Length: 214
Image 1 (spheres, rainbow, N blue to C red):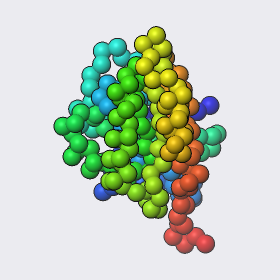
Image 2 (tube, one colour):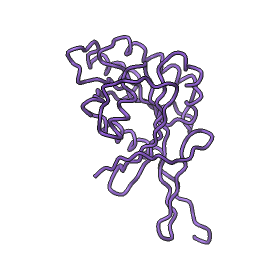
Image 3 (tube, rainbow, N blue to C red):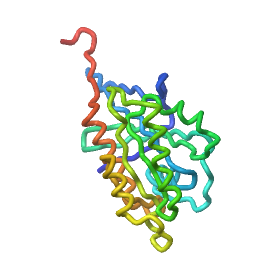
């Protein structure tokens, strides 16, 4: 069974990624930890996606993220492999543009979120992607991998962006595409597991040798 928990006490280094080690018997193990950016217009449901993942609930009383919200999410990508995602929820207001770019450094992955009931939020996805592309590269110099999410999939009666449009945009950049619902939980856990597994395959943890051990 996959375990989702919120880590309420954790330490950041300069690039805001997490370094985690724990000892089991005579062996020191490295837990893979990755920094994931959550970007998109205000009100597309970024914070609600995290709330659904962590608590399995949806809050109808929306409060916009002011600045930056950080969550460390521990999950098991299989029976024996824990991974920590440091999810940086970046406020979508234009007034936070300068602050937001400071948090881009050291990111391993980005989630580009739009609201399926707002064509404007979808049309702004290239703006968010451009900001990421201009600001950062991944730790090994590659272009930052991304996924495109159309949120609020439960509100099909108000849909302005059909799935084919979102998928075509994602395909044009080589990104995966999914629709999600922070309200019902549709696809939410699956998306974060997919991201964690992809990052673990790309950046497996280094297991340090203990002093005196060969």
